[in-house]
Image 1: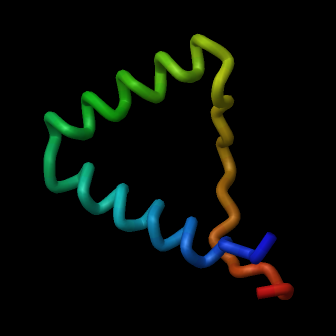
Image 2: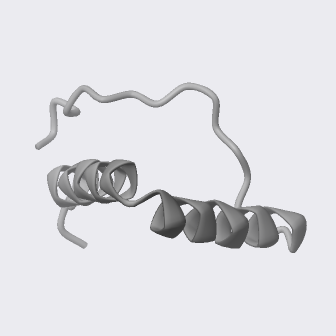
Length: 56
């Protein structure tokens, strides 16, 4: 599989900007992520590495 780190990071940044501009959308997103966490589909990560890996 190709390394898609940069595309995933760009998408994360785009999503964060969109949510900052729209509080209603941000609340819906937060509620959805909470539901995913409660169902065990995702887990919270406190630290995010924003540097690009050497292999990219």
